Image 1: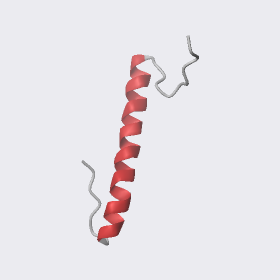
Image 2 (image 1 turned 180 degrees about the horizontal axis):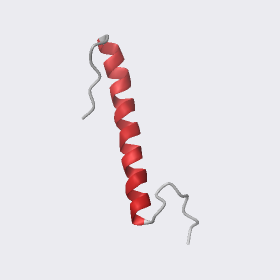
Image 3 (image 1 turned 30 degrees about the vertical axis):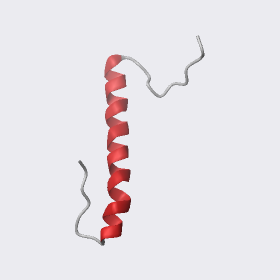
Length: 46
């Protein structure tokens, strides 16, 4: 869970999910790197 506080409510509602998505993407990148895979690669159809 990501919280943004101390600002206007619209600010937290706008930026909270953005920060959570960035954090999730970074964790996925690190996990893929640790596993030796590239989750961001486009499949070649094979």
